[in-house]
Image (tube, rainbow, N blue to C red):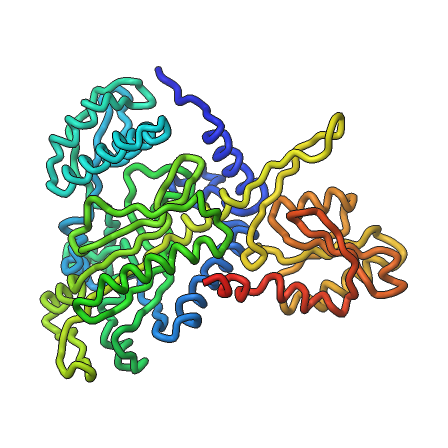
Length: 492
């Protein structure tokens, strides 16, 4: 039985996943009952990091842009919503089984991973050709040819090591449930597989009540659910996840101009939160969704390769037109500047909050060698942007006596109303520094005997480990400036 080789990238990702659990970022859900596959819970520091991510995205969209407003639509929607959107007919993944291992895989992912092997080997032309061929076959829904391509590329199951594949079949990804007290077909509804449709069905409500004029956008953060047959790579692909989506409504004919603008703006945003240029790329879609006339992904170089974290799509007028046809309600906008009614076109930006979380975790995870000779050791820390870090500062009295804890607690109470700060007095100061490094705290405030004399403290900077002396009276303004979202906005 073939075993997957443990490359440095595999090892790094394994270390990141272990770190996430050990230090309170992400736990397997229902772990005491052996867990539930592809479902995860966010721990104390993970919940804070995720909250900060959502708040930054929300503020970027709704406050940084004057022409975007927010919405919070329900998870349950009338089932005709999904008929209009095409999800009941078209929301499928092509799946293939290995007859020997009995394991199931997404056919397109197998081919994408093969293309990544070519790319890593320096054969970009062959990688691009395989991706193009895969896109063409999937768009034509030629599943027999997809299977033949998998066999022709000599793709084997990593478990059995064989290429004994079944036919490729399509599986719908929506979860269904029953509404009301009777479990019959008349009460069947779906858990939403995306948040976008809640925006589309509320288009006119929002436009009229918020007095918006085209072009304008509606932003939303919310849970979505997909019955992923093959869920893996930690929180990258889950059955319950959170989306941050913005639908921007534009005049027909102007969609490509806005598409390019939002593509560039969203790429710049990812760089502004601390992601290195070389770890990001844009990937144009070969195969377009049924609603799109242009689509591009922002991809990040995870330890398991470049993968999508955000999609920017030109959705044309498909969504509003489809809902108008199925609901029999007009969803047209009267544009006073051109003096006519029309159904707006839509440019979408859709980012997975959980994938963004994982990207930040992977980017921030640092193992650096410090010292030299016999004193050489590895320092591990999370280099998170201070504006996103779960804890902004830790107040650490040097000892547990001589009035230092009381002074430290006084500082802690003065700061906790403005920031998420922690107070710790157990263990040596060095061990406390290390623990804060491991959860990504950008600043440690050491309270020592000099503090009692002149009301100054020592601030240790996470990334450089350098220290500086500062009056207590300046702490709040210092932390506020260093951790402000404005530091990110300035780069947009």
